[in-house]
Image (tube, rainbow, N blue to C red; front, side):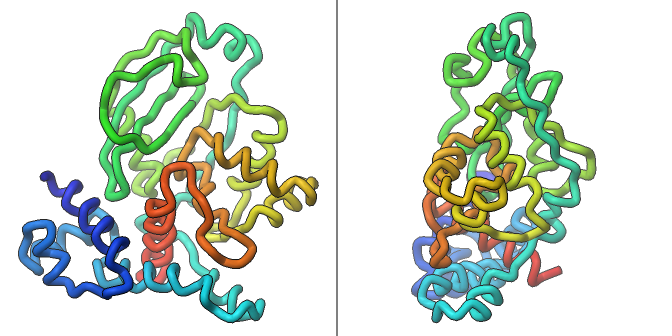
Amino acid sequence: MDDIGRVAAAIDYLIARRAEQPELAEVAAHVGLSRFHFQRLFKRYAGVTPKQFLAALTLESAKPLLDRDASVLDAALDVGLSSPARLHDHFISIDAMSPGDYKSGGRDLRATYGFAQTPFGTIRVVQTRHGIAMLDFVDDVRPIDPMQTPLPNAAFERDDRAADVVTERAFGTADEPVRLHLHGTNFQLRVWNALLALDRGERTNYAQLAGAIGEPRSARAVGNALAVNPVAILIPCHRVITSSGAIGNYKWGDARKRALLAWESASTRRA
């Protein structure tokens, strides 16, 4: 197991056993490291200490149990995104795929795909000269199936270095603008753009997001738009929770969503 794999395994362990509040030595032993080495490694890749991450994770678990008094809930959700997770310090914009490109399936268009490792799992990135077309979490690094992308007729080439660059931007360690090259219905694009308009660290729920796009009765349709979001992290659909404060569902796994929210929360408290 490599270093980032050990951090990912530790995060999974902390999520599974958060109710038991495991000690540092216990988690370190689980990934086969000394306490000192594990502490340094975890902070290097996650940007926070294991203790800070577990504390934030515990808070995330407790939120649904809080009294629903608005001020209490607002205070509980008042978390943000800061270095090293400076996502919204970037300029992120959506360049809608032209009807011609979409209709042709990307014929005559060159696309790259590649894989990068993060503490939250393996990320796959698909991009064209116009921007990032997909960024998703995957279980393996098998060659891409063009038919599973918005560009089935594009010429694909593997480029892991390009995926590394995108991942650095997604997790806030690079300061260059990010452009997304997406296809979606007008409604889906409005929902995704609304998520990009959130303030740093701001969370929202389905009803609030529906209201933000001027469709207050479309909370269910908003949920459907989130379910087909092709770009994790950069379009922060993991920040959409339920009106009760519960975590809610996530396209790439509820445990991963919980981990991302806890990581962002811990990063803010550390800053």
